[in-house]
Length: 158
Image (cartoon, rainbow, N blue to C red):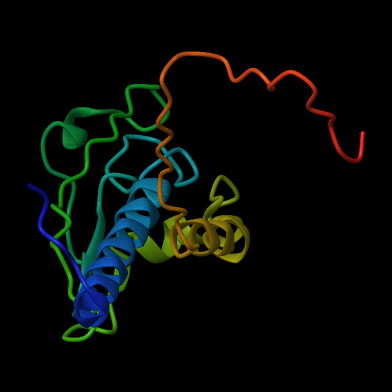
């Protein structure tokens, strides 16, 4: 038998939904930035996006396999380097998403960078779609038989 949930659970349910949406938005943001909107020569920059309660520091040098790639050789590999932790919107209301590559500032200003357009355009869409009210599913019960009007029944408004 299903457990009944009353109005008394509304605060808990809303907090769970907000946390879920908050974490989904953070994950979608990191995923979007970790795509080819970031300049992709070797893929190290696109792989170095990080979500944290502290501002990510741009201090990481290329590591394997990226250090073996030659710039412009089309061998770029995007493979996220930093796991995305779970956040609680009440305990960690500010989450920073940043890049840890030592040359992050130069990559941001690259003509190949789509990061400003992503932040100014697609981010709004991500926020709106992630935090919109979700409609509950609907359940229909029927016998599988078609309803037939009784003899002499007249349809009103017809």
